[in-house]
Amino acid sequence: MKKLTYILMGFFFIFATACEEIETPFPQFKDLEYGAYARRIGPVTGEFNFFNVAGSAISFEVEFYDENKGKNVASYSWTVSYIDRTNNGANNKAAVPLVTVPASAFVVNSNGLPGTKLTFTFQQVLTALGLTIGGINGGDTFEFLGTVTKTDGTSYSFSNTDANLINQPAFQAMVFLRQNVVCPSSLAGEYIATTTGTSTDDCCPDETTLENQTVTLVAKGSGIYEISDFSAGMYFEWYEVYGITVDYVAAGNLKKTISDACGKISGSFGEPFGTTVTVTGTSDPSTGTITYTWKNGYDDMATVTLKKK
Image 1 (cartoon, one colour):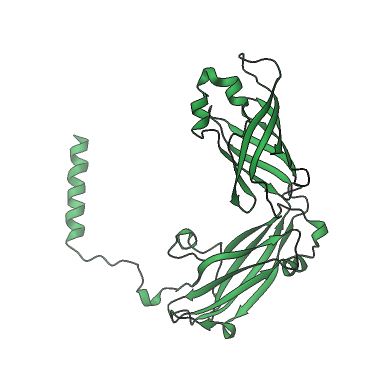
Image 2 (cartoon, rainbow, N blue to C red; image 1 turned 60 degrees about the vertical axis):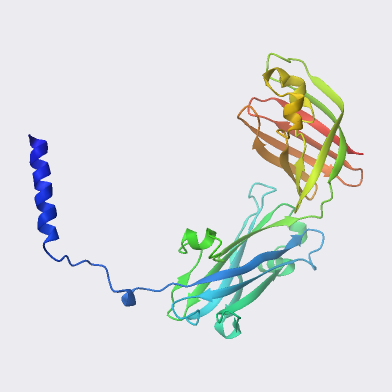
């Protein structure tokens, strides 16, 4: 009976409110605050090469949008910070100003919008942060934050720019950039692997060594490589009984991605039994040798030595 009463009250409320004009607190569009953002045109190009500071730079181009076709943008500024990934953040550097481009330096592009092209040199970034190449390592990271400031004093940065503007391809709001320090890497090719490991499974309690396994590395760019079998034959050796067959391996199910950052090999990825594999190691281009250790979530682990054919 109470349910019927509530339903009748609900109908009465809907009827009563439908018969009167409701004034909403929503302001007129003309009274709203208008924002602004910088849209990236094309990709970010270049790199920070650990072995070539003087010749390293990154570049990009943007155009500005606001309620007045970008004409109310007063300036575009960037800061940079340093993340010490080698030492787990021990030598991090907080953000410092890097560059500010005033509206007077903007150039109207073919879309009729003001825009600018920016280049950050590796040396410029190091100097701004008070660093030298001797104080950083390959694989460390610089983070850049951009801010668009309007003539009315309002500003728009990573903290208050909508995620859709940043992430959607149609907008590409350029307010954040992460750049790793890279080294030239040429590890692609075929290798002969020697692998020694131990499994926690009852199938194979003893230490196992495999030799003369063929492993292939395919370059994917910027020190990233696809390795044909991260376990270098060990998963097949141990776990054929669980479905890791020759056909399973041949189908590419053990292909994973590893990275080379100035001689440091690393990787993190899933494996067939639902855990995560971590890879750590080193490469020596002078001898054509790569050595790494992988370990999965069951504490199965092995050390792999790859020698280039």
